[in-house]
Image (cartoon, rainbow, N blue to C red; front, top):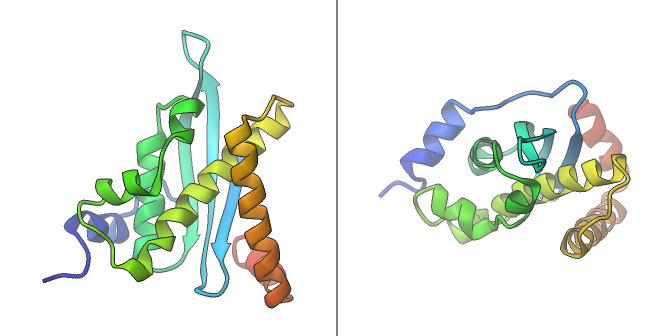
Length: 167
């Protein structure tokens, strides 16, 4: 029995939405330096006819395992056309379900990293636009920042290496 679903393999072999967005509305980074997965998500956000902020385009850069790349590809495909409120409601379970097969427990963190990068990109957008940040997003940002600080303390100098790699 294969370890990964066909959908995971497809998104890994032919990832969608790879690359940067010049002049991105928001950019978010996430990573787990202890396992080596690093990712950035870029968003282009515009208002639709109803005046809602919608993710018009989403792209990513990921250095990581099969699941990290597949999740980044899948997540950027899933959020296109969604309002920011809809995107913020996504969970790791939504991603895992969309991948078509439960992940091995030691790979579940890859789903969290993709979502963390998305949430950080939306947070970045709110900050740039000087908009009120939803309470749940503020909590997520603090959690993500705290985790990054702990990893950086443990692995001094790796943050600089990460920035060079994803430059």
